[in-house]
Length: 459
Image (cartoon, rainbow, N blue to C red; front, side, top):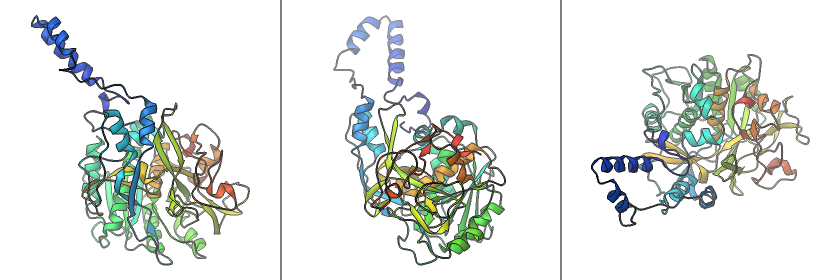
């Protein structure tokens, strides 16, 4: 589960390394050739010359991972004006993450602490191999995605988007994704590659998070970044339309705002795209519905706490909730009609969410960012992480049917091993239990669960 630099991924096991054994064997062979094998081995066995690190059990690692605790800050305006949206990215500013606790447990050391307003020299959150392992995507990520394009829709410009993405992908051994090789494209909502919106450090952090999560989940995919000129729903919606016009079959949206009577108009103007998997963050303020996650044409994505475990999966998940006002969103829409494929018993309109993925900042993901209030490696959480992860899963699963709304796909796989059912935790208080509390089967905070492979995301 640990994410290692590319030069060591193939030689590092989950809870130990055979590299040290190989090195010792080479040294012993060399000494034997010199006629010193017996004496050298006897000397090497003494505590004075070799420090033996006791094997750490999966149970012990999981226990230390459970100690993860962080402070974090919202990357964008948390209370947008009517008709506007806020990004759902949360940047970790202090404490220790689950990834740091895991690495420290394996090494038998005290975990380093994240410093406020400072970036780390190396990642402090989960990386591609962690996420692929947690969601059963390792094989698909290696072989699928070529020729597919994931669009990332955000507001304003990140001038360092391409260079920061290059650093992330290089560190983790992912293939280059650049403008020059045709893998990466950045445009404004008008489609221009030169006349871009004003730069904004808050949304730039969101952009880095989205680009990195799309890369982590579907490293062979092309990436199209479409930047809206503001965070108004009209401009963001126009950017969604631009992404579809440019051929993207998977469009990730990590933002949201309050519901309004205008939402049904936004639905048909911006999000009604048959044959396109549009994912949207469920929100970061705990129980309560927001838009466009409430659109019946999108896949609304909730958030979980993802931790290593000694169980057969190697991971465990619960509803992400930090406090009564910090956690994944969910709820029954006040305006949007219920799609035909959604059949929960009580909510007569659109219910949020459909599926989920990691979002808790304490079990957050590594991001490389140099413009969005960061100077290198930072850790992010929020449902801004889960939405592009799920977009990547759709891309790995293959092109949706031309007349389909892919939000329906996980419902066809409901209750099967294609989804990890999340059955513990809540994101607040509600009168109808499943609106805010995890249960066996469908619930608002996590939908039908998290991916276990790609079969729940294809028609």
